[in-house]
Structures are given as C-alpha cells and as structure tokens.
Image 1: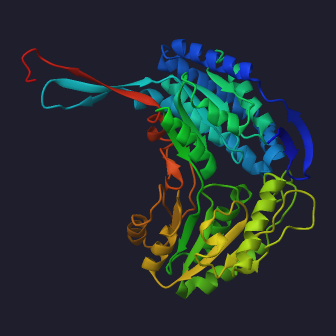
Image 2: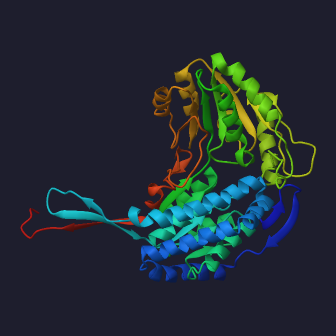
Image 3: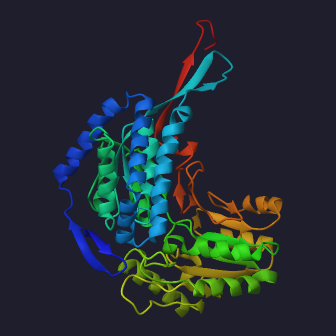
Length: 460
C-alpha cells in the first residue's frame, strides 16, 4: 500500500510520501539502540518530564492535530479533538504514576528477604492502526518510554501526517534522538524487522492476519509480543434495562468513530420481551443520523477511513444478505462522493452468514433476539473474538454475574466498552493477548528481576 494522505470525505489524494530506504531504517534502529544505553540510566523524573512536555504540546496544538486526524481517516472533528485530549491524558497518567508502578515490589519468602525490581529491556517496535492515530500510539509509547525503553513506531500507511506529527511533538519536547522514531515503511517490512536482534519486543494493534504474522516472527525469534486485534462486542439488553438510556448508548456504541472501533458495540442482543421496543427505537435513532463532512459540527456520521474500507464493508453486508440476512435499515453505499456507508442494521443472522462471525468495521449493527439470560451469554460467547462487551440492566448484581460468564477481556455494565488511562485494555481469543493502559500496561515490556538477600546460614 502506498503511504499517502487521501481525504476520506472526497476520496481525493492530497499527499504522498516516500518509504524509508533500508539504510535509513537501519540507521533508525541503531539510533534507538544507542539512545537506550543512556535512556535506561535516566531518572523517572526526567522521563516523566518528557512525557508531560509532549502532553502539553498536544493540548496546545489540539485543533491542528485533530484536523490531521479528520483529514486522513475521516473521524468527526469533535471526536478527533477528544482523541488528542485522551492521548495527552495517557501521557500525563504514566508520567504521574510510572515511578510508583515501577517501584520495587517486596516479597515474603520463607527464608531470607527478596524483592522484584523492574528494568527496561531495550528497543521496542510498535505497529499501530489508523482508526485512533494518536491514542493508539500514546498507549504504547507512554508506558514504555517511562519504563526506560526506546520505541520505533510503524504507523498505518493512510495516516502518515499524523505519524510524522507525533514524532515532531517528541522532538519539540526535547526528546533525545532515538527515544521515539517514526518509520515510514510498509506493513510487510515491519514484520521483517521483528527478527532484528536489536529489537527486543513488538506490540501490534490491527487485524488478525497482521497479528498472526508479527506474533509468528516474534515467536521464532523468542521475543515478547502484545497483540490487540479485532472485536465483535456484544451489547446485551435485559428486560429491566432503562430502555431510553440503553438505546442512546447503543447508538453511541455502534457509530462512535464512524463505527471503526475495535471495541464498538457490534452485536445487539435483546431479551425477547423487550426486543421489539429496543429495535424500534434503535432503528429510528440510527435512521436519523446526519451523514456528512466530518469537519462540520452538525455531522453525526462521517466517512469510513478509506474507499477500500467502505467497499469491503458493503461487500460484507451484501454477502450476508445473499446468505439469508435481513436488512432492517440501510445496507447500501449512499449516492455521494467519499468513503461513506449508510447506517445499517442486519437481523435473521445465523452461523452460516458472514456477519454472524465476521467483524463489521463501520456503521453496521447486527440484531438478535434471545429468550433469556443464558441464551444471551451463549450468543455473546459464540464469536471468535473476545475483546469487550456490555450489559444493560438496573440489577447490578445480576449484571456482574452475567459479566463473569462472558469470555472477553473487558465487560462494561450500563455503558458501551470504552477506554481511559487508568483502566486495563485488552482481550482474549482472536482479539489478542496482553494488556495496555493502567498499571498492567506498564508491566508488559519489562524485566521483572528477582533480587534475594540470604543469610549465610540459610538452608540451601
């Protein structure tokens, strides 16, 4: 794929970029390796100061940076500004709490004394997606720079200006050369870098295919990897839910980021007794969404990230209809320029239909009716993915019992799956492994070294 900026609202090519040469990439890895030898010796205070400076610059430049996001991948401008704020919050979070998270952890062995000391492991490679161009990078880079690692980031090829802007922020904040480096290269070349002995670990957010490729290379080279892959989050509505609030959150959960979100609510599962009420209200609100220019504050549903993404999503819908699915709303590409897809609802789905198991990355919802709680859980778990999920009920204890039975990394009660700096983020099954954010997110790429002190006459 060419590295270029294409306006998703018009499908017009705005700018193209040359890939880095083999020698340029080699130099970048060398610089990161050299930088690590000094960065690992710095104090937590110095590392925190850098992250705080980058966060401040992000906030100061929020409108400009948000504009890059909207231009390159079509996010609504208000949501793009929110992403910049969230990214800055993540940087500040690790700057404020990193030293505490990385403090020695005392143990209580039967003999002697012991503690765990955290130390950095070296140069890390992050392979990041286009749907949250700043947030995804922040949650990888912030904890690892705080640990004392240095990072190389291969960003998605459709958001090159966002990628360059992030590196520029670190430069402007005074980061030593090699602490944070943007690699303008293809995804295929990124997988090939995993075997480089100077790179000690890799984190990828993206598709299952990309994750399998990177994980395979990491495994062959005995390196740690963290994967955050796709999701098909269930949104369960129980009969005692506050219906108006559930519907309101259902629309937000499905169309946030124009539906292009790993933890978007994608499968809506309603208990039979309230299914008609839910789907009627949900359909009405989805149908009323204002589609248009993502830079216009009145727009509620913008374009998908690229024409390719829109074509692929429309194809998923058509293949599902051909296999027996029913379209309750939408189902087509609108007659307008840009990478748009109508807000769509599919039902009458079963395992032989593509939309039953495939992730629908855009404003397409799947709707199901079930007879009871157990049927809702069985359906929620009948998925190759296990990222997040939601349960709407006014009986919190009931919600907690059901949440415990859902096979995902995250379950939210009375809210769509979402993210914040102090909550761990990650999944299971086909959604990957490892965690980002919170204290768990700083714990992935560190050497947890045991140091034990014994008396000379302690037992062997």
